[in-house]
Length: 147
Image 1 (tube, rainbow, N blue to C red):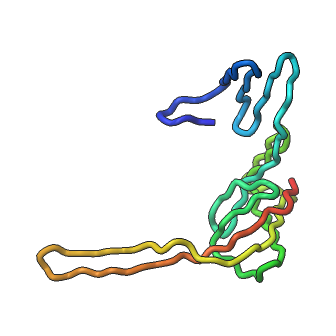
Image 2: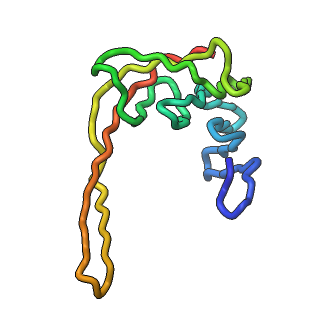
Image 3: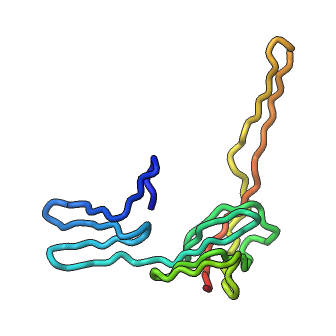
């Protein structure tokens, strides 16, 4: 997990008075020590997948906004351009994609993003132009990652 200005965060311990300490092992793994007991945070499997020309980090049960897909709401879609899969510390990297890996998603809804205003002006020329745009998105729910 990188921290701004080029510094790398390797191992950090956070002390909590009278309770114990948290230790950051990697980006999604925490170990909590409480008076001799060790409680590990659940490690989630994640994947880097190419959806409509963009790469997304996805986890099972999470919702992601992607560019508009040509699928009906409530339908299921599979993506097979999986670039990386991480499962309990085992990282598989494709060259460029992993063979046999796929991500199954369910289309939740089709929606539009916030309005973006484009304003052009040339000074002293009596020219100004205002234009707006709302991008179309599809919200998808990650159902399954097969790696």
